[in-house]
Length: 116
Image (cartoon, rainbow, N blue to C red; front, side, top):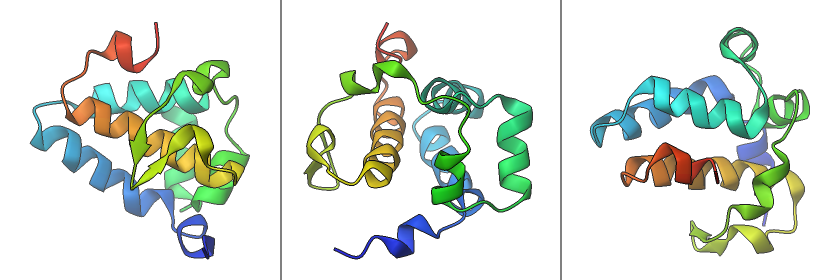
């Protein structure tokens, strides 16, 4: 599978889609940001810098301050693949983010999404 297209996709072009998905289900941008910050270690300022630079997913995750050590607790199926079995490290991080956004949109409590 050629993943180069998603790897080169600017995070800034997908972020509004994440917001739209969350808001359509009654969740907020602030809640979305909390889960992105939890996963990546970014804060509002540093994530906005990545958006302003139009960083692609590869750069977004490569420059992430700290991938949360509890990511191994994120399990389940996203886009037909079990996230815990994805071999490509970058694709797995992207799918972790997709999974968290899905959980948010499905109404799961933030504490559960953050594996607390």
